[in-house]
Image (cartoon, rainbow, N blue to C red; front, side, top):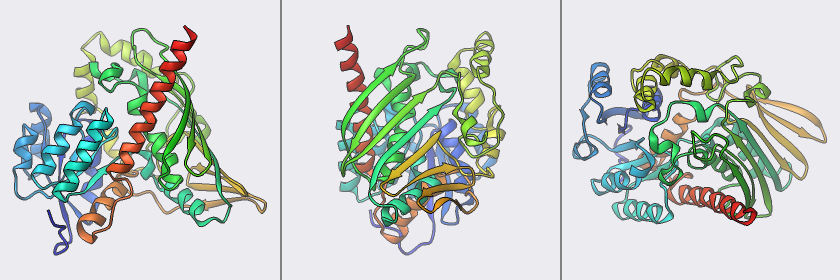
Length: 396
């Protein structure tokens, strides 16, 4: 498929109207180069809500959606195990693709997705992750400039309530893409690899934990990654709803919105809700398009501050950088310096995902977060998993 260089907008449809797909809608609606052109969703309720609000086609299946001629691209926000099939289907119909993280569950699937999109001549962009956030991009620019010398160390740690948000059964099954190693750690790997200019991970030492037998998938990890170019990374993540690392970010939440500390409340709330319905139903009711938390998620998309993913500290030979509310801090021989960033765009990083799509489709610019980038991020996450399994075997 040739790029649409004769037009000034890209018509994009959403595949899946759960949380990931729904939260992309405000970014699409406000992006000057993108038009919301349709959606596919198996849930009658979510599909009806979308049709009520938008005058564009909404289908039951992906197959029906990609047959529509007035769609240039699709945003695939379906369960992880479906990503490969849906990307290949879209590419076969000449649609450009943005696929949610993780790109897939296996390297073989990643390779098939890359090959299918390259043969069809369509874009393959992997996101949204926090690697698209404006503070990460600003830090990357400073690192690339060389003003602080070579990149040496990156620290990323995040403590959240992730494990106690309502989940579908496969989200608690590692073999089906459940747990933090597929759902949360890709954010961190993408961030550090973006800052390092796309460097591959060439070495891994890691330990992961399953601290709740009722949610038998990885909920915490500590990993050290060696990157190409002699930079080293430390990643820590815990989703068990005890400490909340947003406390260290001025109680600005992940999406850039103000919040109050409520440690342990997600765990308690889940217990109360589970007495009323299954987690799968709850997840749809809360996070699906037009659900109970839709207005809150929509408001979050227009947050006053930039999104972030826990604490991020980047060390070069002649100074350190840190993501902070409102911008970034630079610590060097000249002393601390605050660099204020422009007001956050709608969607907190999601507008930047759309930028990469538009740059390819309208201006023929190769995406940074392309299929090859997404493949290497998945490879790093799988290496972390392998390292934790080997360590567990050696200990027992």
